[in-house]
Length: 163
Image (cartoon, rainbow, N blue to C red; front, side, top):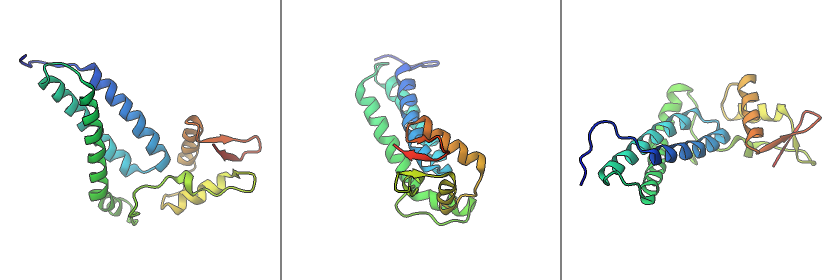
């Protein structure tokens, strides 16, 4: 058994953290929940640290089961933090009620016309209905993220369609 001293660098744990971060960012872009974003960051950091510790305890050997365990523990950590603390955080920060079903994708709440097209005003309506202050910069940024990630497509007439 090796003795762990000094700084230990685990490239596999870093790659795992980057992959998990991308997955979290994709989900958070759909929910636009600042609370979930904050809690997920903390869960990701804990998963990365856990992976490094297990790597060191495993004699500086990486195994796929380390990533599997750290992914699972991060998801459990996020779920528990959200279920236990999100409502209190939301009430403290915004005074709004929390959905009992967890965060919902704003994109799912958007209504389209017969051709499957929706407008910027519809996005503002859904954004406001979710208890968020209508902020043009944030809404435009959200639409940009959705386009970049392939969730929507912008039409020539200024409307959008879901993909």
